[in-house]
Length: 438
Image 1 (cartoon, helix red, strand yellow):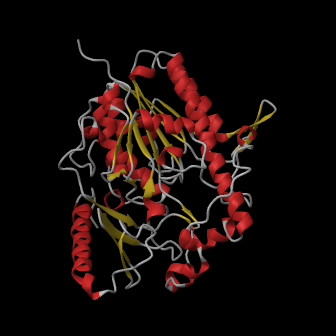
Image 2 (cartoon, rainbow, N blue to C red):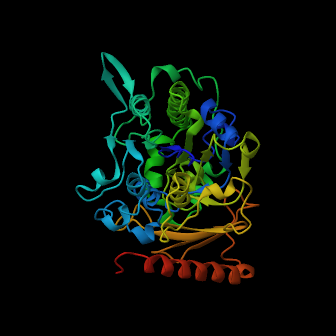
Image 3 (cartoon, helix red, strand yellow):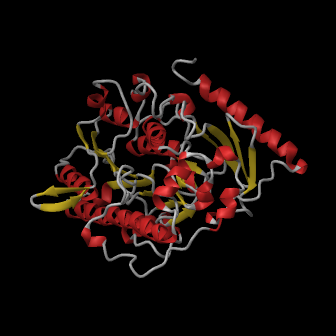
């Protein structure tokens, strides 16, 4: 008798950086349910997104492809149907899964394609607080309520539910930026959030002009331009994450109550990182660590306990999540996918796992959001920009804040050339994989 296929719950948060949960070593933030999930599953200390912007990153999560291949971000035509017909929801739906989506979709697609992806689709949007039955209810809780309803009506058909929170993304049009429900209002009142070392104005003043005059700096004025505002905004950001954490706990209790917990795999991830004052910035987009690094957890209750509760240091990517979901469902992974299934870590770290990752941000016609690309391996981070001769090279293992640029040191000239050539080679491959090449 064939084993019953697992249910899959893919939870995606928006702008949650890698260290914005307690399990990552953050001693201030309150995330007991995220921490429990990480401790009971596989936790990846070095998880990254290939592009640090929600539209491109979410397109990569659907398709398993780099932005350079799927060619979608803000301001671009809809993501091509050919890519969406290789996406994990399309393939799972055609393999007999009941597929659902709740929350922030974040990707523009052609008319009619959504119906081919999901049996149930419930896209939500701001405002964060809205009146329901005479009470203010937070959007994260609304999304959670709808996820609970989906789970409660699961039936015997295996399901894959993509639950995509808007939190903790700031409400960019609002002066307050961050909004949370009253039940987390008490958190963080009596703590002081530490200021990152590169938030010192002298660091920002040392940057080249084109790196100063970006949207990262504009949003810094919205959030961090005084010590008082910094404390208020970071605590608001943390409260929004704690709200998601509460919803996660409610969902896990629902899985237990419905008798589904032992056969439901939970994948938890952030869609991109987030500057919290580092380098004088707010936002993401660039290739420095706070912007590209995210939490990533795979919890599979079907694994024996002695095979779970592991931490891995190997670099993993958002494009690895897509083949992971297919692998869990027993669906063949398309050859076009750029990543590998994280189920390969169930026994131990694969000996042939990648040692380096390519990174990019390709949004066009916006001088406030720079086009850039780079490479990160176990020792170095290499960054270059389309419209500048500036090269950045950091030995990130010893220079964790990326402040000592080695690219101008002649002793590293060969290393710079090596990484530049590596990027050129990868770009050529990714462009060649496009359905329609320019």
